[in-house]
Image (cartoon, rainbow, N blue to C red; front, side):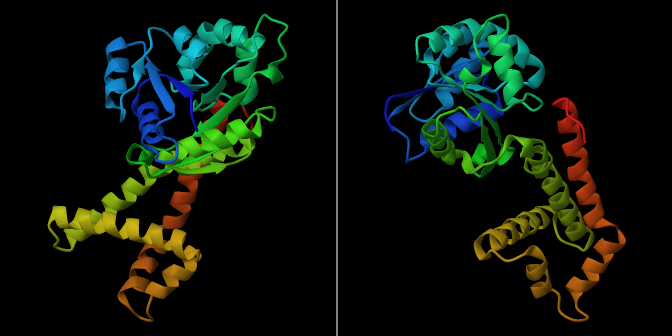
Length: 288
């Protein structure tokens, strides 16, 4: 994988995490040039310095769009319309020259069709000629343990999708999925870390209530959740089966599970994911 340029518009936590993951990925490193642009120039410069091996800081979003083979749109959804209007002329020029970039968006609420329509607005350019890939990463990408859903426009060459999938592997696990699933992914893995942190905090509080020092309680809570997740992924067993392995008849664990069921624990978690899904759907203009 040689001679690829990635331009990241936006240098916030997620954009920086993904660029660091790509630059540090042993399977892709060495042949990739990374660059940032940001409304705050100093922030873009700082992000460039934080990338392993160094990166560039572009002078403008237009320069980023003129340069990148993949142009990451790592800005907030409410800012994306302005950014797309700004970079559209450069993207269209490159499209007409046969060297258009792949636009990679992580903005909730912005469908592939909506992004392509914004780029081609006021022109006769067919929207299908604009290659867009949507991704939904989550915050563990900051430590290369992210879960990243990836959905490509139908016309995007399979080679480009596979190339991006490989590059993003440095930030975590990548799963290619249909775009119509992305709102559900947002509710589950996009918002899920916050739910997991609440659970770990509650576990630790229970440990403190039972007499453990706070630092020990947090260590045991986080390690327990980490190990339990690894058991699901590595054994392939259903969580319910693994739960039953811990629950001895008349024992401590089944007593705790009974308390969770009495508190509607599972219903509360299901409702949290559904609420986040509905909000994502609302942002994208969809209907339940």
